[in-house]
Length: 139
Image (cartoon, rainbow, N blue to C red; front, side, top):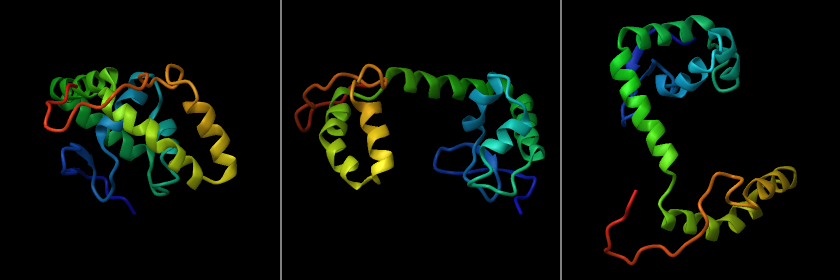
């Protein structure tokens, strides 16, 4: 049973439901898109079978009570997502993708290959050289 209580989840994850890893910032895009607490609770039922609309409403209430602070952090998170990974991280991803694909079950492998076949379609940067060791990393 998930208590109807909010706590700081630690490790920079911010406020979330006590006893879970579900933080407020994970839910903000769904709320801004107009999803109801019932819709959002249903989306997270696999990892949290006891999650109810009341839990989501509690997080929404926290968001409303701390709106400026919560939205400032949300905008920082969104800006980081929009910037994407530094080119050297994308290169490491490209190099490691074959190993990832080899570990996937066949039914997931084809979908994953299709997703990452064209970096631009997957929202990923084109591969470039990583910076030399000891050089500052941008991004």
